[in-house]
Length: 304
Image (cartoon, rainbow, N blue to C red; front, side, top):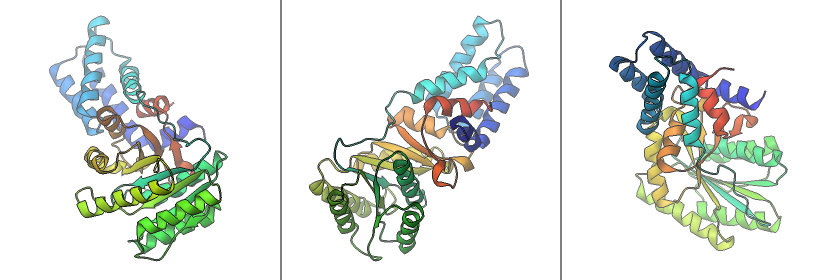
């Protein structure tokens, strides 16, 4: 399956809603009425596109009407162009620490899909010709340790883990030492889920990052917030608050295939200027896809 096909398949719920509704509104009248504008705004906001980008699209549609005597056959192309422009401001490539270990910390709330994302991202890195190692630092949830070890066994990727209830920073410390001594390219740290409002747990995450920075300069080199696409605009709040405690370098949007709120990717990047680096479009290891703005924008509005 090609890249666009994967994006289209994963974004089908969002695309079905957006494209059909936009075309319906525009085609019902030869003039762009105030009611049409309100309906366009409602449809775009319902996909969690965000107020700023929604207004940009509506303004561009108004100009199209004025310059083409009411012909708006290009509305989907207009929307796609604006979304792509908003998504293309930041570098979404995965950081690589030159000639040394690169440490990636995966953070987020409970149920966001961090452990699954860690396994899939390790698969992506291995498939790219690099050597990844995983660290099971979610020691508060026994199932997380088992789950990550299962991913490691399935993908033939080593996992550093300890007992349930162990100190996460200690596990991370051992994982960095092991990765350095065995000359791995990447270490992916699966951290425990925590609400951004739980200050004691956020302090613990800060401690983990301090510990690994003493063993590997600049670590973590990537701190990726994993957010569940189905929560829509609430992801903005999570990103804002996590970024205050542990400066984020990017986001991974999980479970995008199960939501009609795919526009939230646009809203997050537009407001926070944090690059979306990967999106989860299914259950298989290869369903974690590197984020490509042009393909994503196209898949939001077109099915071919």
